[in-house]
Image (cartoon, rainbow, N blue to C red):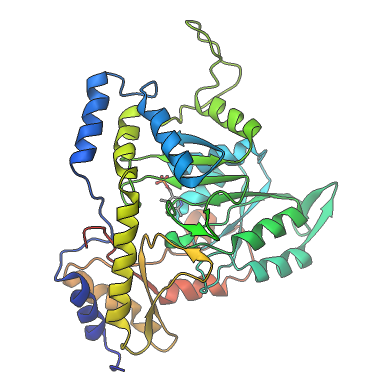
Length: 385
Ligand SMILES: *Cc1c(COP(=O)(O)O)cnc(C)c1O
């Protein structure tokens, strides 16, 4: 073992990826992307009527084996629409990990619903299912087939488990708990295209799962998302509402509800179509990068590179360094020293329950999420590395 030092951490990173500048994650865009985006432009149909939208959705459907897919302008609105279609209303509560990207929680707030923060575990970076079950047993009761928070009297309508950095949370268990406690499961699989648990794609365990194709994700459409849906009725509702609730007619503008303009434009779908053709190559390079980091840090005292669990095949979207309890106090120093060398490491998200708009919301003890925040550093993870 080599003795822990901040310098040793930096050197072990440089040994793998070379000197900076290295950002956390950059997309790889090339000939294929130019070819398909040009096709979209030449067709003149760059908006939601273009043919690339359907093509892209079909490819996502094939790849994830989801029953139905609706592409959207981003993942945040995909989550919002999913909650809405599953009946989440003002004053309902939605369980959500405090350790996630703020968009997950904002989607709940857009409906006037209340986020209720739950804890995560460092073993998989996702919801701590054991702690959740004990918490629900203590703090909720079932009445008229609904889960009631005994303290607030409000209905807990749904849970949004998040698969963090490409790794699966304890999704099977969470689906079971949700069934027992009568709430819906919407998976935030924003970071997880190409990640599987027991050979099933993440985002297809709950009723609905949402993907993101933002510029920093494993594939990008510039901005965009997709909703994976297992049920035809829900699919129809989502597609209808995402498309301004327009009724089919050759020329009339007839809309039967207040809909949304959430569909992905064709020019973005063209970019995604080109990217998706390379997903296997991208995942391979990421798993490869994982192995190289793992090797480089193998003999460094007090740290390890996060590894996927037994039943999982992660896309390794972001590589994750975990400091042990003794050395976690060096986290900021490591971030700072590497920033100076233009190696742009990032910490995990600040707990959402600590952000200004969310400080007064319901929450359980969040010791696991805090542990993750204190110990985790994301390493540069671009495909080109
Ligand atoms: C990126 C991300 C989102 C938001 O996706 P957008 O497409 O940018 O709206 C939501 N949740 C998680 C976990 C993310 O990483």
